[in-house]
Structure formats: C-alpha cells, structure tokens
Length: 430
Ligand SMILES: *[C@@H]1O[C@H](CO)[C@@H](O)[C@H](O)[C@H]1NC(C)=O
Ligand SMILES: *[C@@H]1O[C@H](CO)[C@@H](O)[C@H](O)[C@H]1NC(C)=O
Ligand SMILES: *[C@@H]1O[C@H](CO)[C@@H](O)[C@H](O)[C@H]1NC(C)=O
Image 1 (spheres, rainbow, N blue to C red):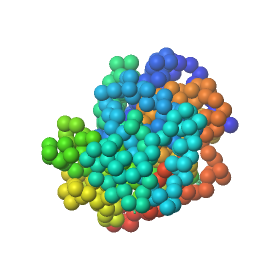
Image 2 (image 1 turned 180 degrees about the vertical axis):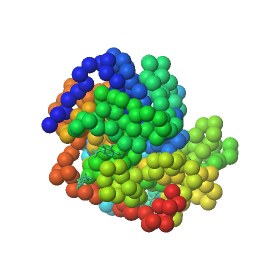
Image 3 (image 1 turned 90 degrees about the vertical axis):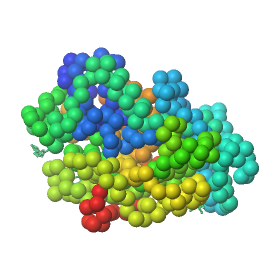
C-alpha cells in the first residue's frame, strides 16, 4: 500500500472537478502553501449540471452520525461568518410518519443532546404554524421536529464566491475542451497527469479526483461510489404567491424523501426535490468493458429538463402534501441532480491504495455541500496524512471485498422508492 502524500509543495497538482470538493481543496492547498494548483472542469464554476449548483441546498446540523454532526456545527458558523450573503436561516423542519417513527431522527436527537442541543419539537399543526406562519402542510399522522437555526444556502452563489477566492489565491482554471478530462495518464502504476479533449496532456505529480457523480468513468470505483440522479423541479411564483410562503422553513418529509425550499428572495422560485435512492444509468467507462452509472460527460446534463415520469409524479405529489396551494403550477424547469452515492453515505477522501499520485475527494452522497466552509480543511488533513485515525478510516477508499456492489443506501436519511435503473429509452432522453 502506498498512501503517500505529496513530496513537496512546489510540484504541480491537478484537481479534476470544480464542485465543492475540488474548489474547497484548491483554496486550502493555496492556504497551506502549495504553489502550483490547477483545477480542470468541463465548465466554469458554478458548473451548470454539477451537484454543487442551482438555487439552493439544505443547511442542517441534525445528523445521526457524531462526526458529521460536529462538522455541520463548525460549518454552520462558517456560513454565518464567511458566506453569510448566501445563507438564509429560514428554519429546517423534518416530518415523518408518527406511527412508524424514524430511526435517523431518533439518533440525530441523541447526537444533538450529546452536543448540548435539543431538536425543537412541534407537537401539532398549530405549533408549526405559530413558528412558521403561512405553512399549509397537511400534518395528519405525522411528527415534526426541527431547528429554527437551520435553513438553506444559495448554492451557485456560494460556489461563485469560493471560485473567486480560489482565483485570487492563485489557483489556475482550465475549462472547456482543455478542461474536459478523458482519461488519467499512467506511467507504470503511477498517475502522471491527465488526457483532455483538446490539445496536449496536462502533467501533474498529484492528481486529485473530485469529479463527484462522474468519478467512476475515470477510475474503477463503482463498488464504492456510484451516480444516482435525484429529481428536482422549479416553479416560478408571482410576488403575491411568494409572499404567502415568505416565512416557510425548508421542509423535508423523511418518509417520501421529498423536500421543499421557501421561495428565493428576488427571483421567487419555489424548488422541490427528492432526497431518495434515485435513478441509475448504464454508461461505458474508461479502461473497462463494465457499464457504470454516470451522467453524460460531453454535454450539459441540466439542459433538456427531462425527468422520468414516476419522478415527476412524485414531485407533484410532494407539492400537494407540502405546498398544496401551488401543486398545479407549471414547471419552470426540471432536472436530475447527480449524487455520488456511497454504501453508508460516507465520503471517499483518501490516497488511492494502489495507484500512486492519485488522491480521491469524492463520494458526497448527497450531503456534502453544507460543509463548504470547512470541507477543504478536512480534505487537506487527509491529503497530508494528518487526520485522525477515525476520520481516515471513515473516508478510506474501500476495497471491493469490503463493499457489496449495488448497496449504496446513504446514511439513513433517504426516503421514497429504491434505486431504479433507467430504461434505454429513458436514458436516451437525458
Ligand atoms: C486506460 O486507457 C488509456 C487510453 O484510453 C491508456 O492510455 C491507459 O494506459 C489505460 N490505463 C490503464 C490503467 O489501463
Ligand atoms: C472494477 O472493479 C470491480 C470490483 O469492484 C472488478 O470486479 C472489476 O473487474 C474491475 N474492472 C476492471 C476493468 O478493472
Ligand atoms: C409524508 O409522507 C407520507 C408517506 O408517504 C405521506 O403519507 C404523507 O402524506 C406525507 N406528508 C407530507 C406533509 O408530506
């Protein structure tokens, strides 16, 4: 096993992927004195079809896992300090079936208590409506818990700020065909750079793979991280309509996985999505005859607004349950948001155990964005082999024997139907 860090801070480091993993890593590399840092991506950040973009991401501290609960609290402070222009403390409410209970919430409650905080309980509809006037959720048979200090972040806005910070710190960016990585370049068992869609290869003494849902097209890691498309829909509201939802929190129904954000100030867009098991594709990957689940590499996956019919129906049903007054409004646009799922929802942040010169920072599993203010520090501690044994073990690159293929269920916070592989006809419409 190699698991080496970089040998010197003056060697060229190439980061593939300008999402939250890649950008936060780049900024922290510069902060720690690495001189040559280049980020490659197909598009300029905010990358239009990345999972670090669009109008909103949930910011919550409730976690069933003590490490993420602690990180989320550090990160929440970071949002309030360095990224406050993009953070909206609307409140965050989790609903679930009262009769069945919810293990994730139960554990989150214990973890919060251990950290000296109580999750707020809303015993009935009136209590919820009192905290969040205007809310029209059908509360029957449900239990509601939440946090008035949770909320949402403008994802594209925060990524724009982070990219500007990278640029000012001296990070180089390559985008378009020069930034579209087609394969890694190897010399013996070492990665020595990348091949790109146009022009000569780009050499590197360390390559950092932060390609999220696209990762398994470049390296064989489909046993430990695989792409799933999660449906998202956007509705344009009028001034008057947006006013009705002004005090609305971010609400998630953990039984269905459907969640809804308050309308964005200014643009008044209502967003609904599902934090579920998603949809898989079957794509040809580099260096193998295996088919892997991945979004398209050569064009923008957010462009044509296609959603499978069952996904569209689930979002509509979610609207009827969460914001019934707008359930029949037409979509402004829709898309699949591409998660990179892992067996237990743990990130993959590790030196590749067999390939020298390759470090992985991926596997966001649909919950990494909220860590934007602190993620780079955690990644660099792993890169420099300084992280605690617990963290390194949690985010290690698992070997195929440790991970049973196909079971990437996340951390227990998902709801709704199991993962479904898209038919060839559906995939052709992506
Ligand atoms: C993968 O394929 C590329 C060409 O597409 C080749 O240059 C490279 O050596 C291959 N890598 C491995 C590990 O087989
Ligand atoms: C990719 O990894 C899997 C184990 O996860 C293995 O079964 C498969 O043979 C590998 N494919 C290639 C081309 O190395
Ligand atoms: C939440 O999901 C459950 C289970 O599908 C459903 O019965 C209930 O109506 C939903 N409620 C809301 C408010 O979303």
